[in-house]
Length: 288
Image (cartoon, rainbow, N blue to C red; front, side, top):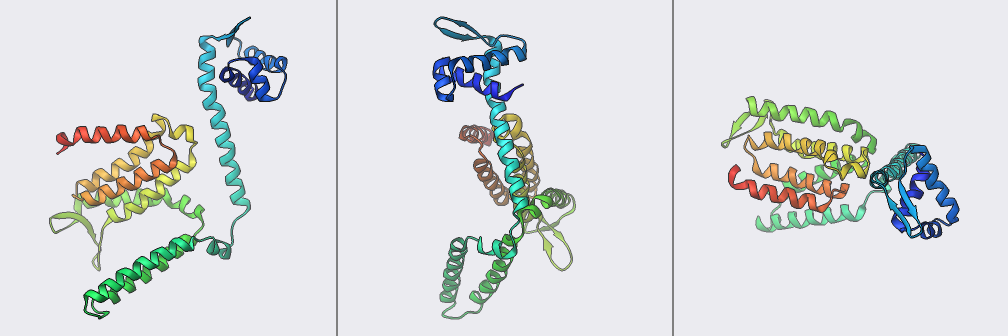
């Protein structure tokens, strides 16, 4: 199918007349009429019935118009995404460039908040760094170094490891529910001897990586369909279900909130959130 002819057909339908569509496309009326006729000849059936008053779409024409818009949008998104990938591969940033591209304002806010927290602990301890402020400062320093190191790693690395990290973390969650270490009335840990590993905490990172990979690999038109939402919903629902079995409601909600945020910035329509929220509220008495 000639996509250019399809675009002209869509423009005629949306404009409501060949004359208006021709003006918007900056071509003659006869030219745009020929383009629509060429599309009909290519398909082998009529898309519209013309008369002196204008035109009326056939059933086939209505279907081609609705689906054609999705096709055109998908082609544009694929083209844009491919160009973005090509540009990134051709313009890989050096370590120095990645460092100076960091959001230092955001990092500064984090440091200020940490300083306020340490100052509060110092005050609570009666003007002493021990026992809380010093330990908190050390933990923050280590965390800040890890944050900066993670921010400087090329995005392609996260794209490659997203699925393996998700699968390994999910397998650990399953192991926890089967033979995990029990403590404080919950079965949430894997006893490694020198410390207890909590896979549900790792899943907070794994779910962000995997959802980001999925949403970056499919066009927006697919994300906004029910079919396009099946995979990401399963990616979230399966680990949340295993975490709820531990039980760990707090971590389950945290993962759900992260997922909802990613769904939103990926382009999922707001009414789907409202529908999902309503379903949860309706099912709450039964689940409880």
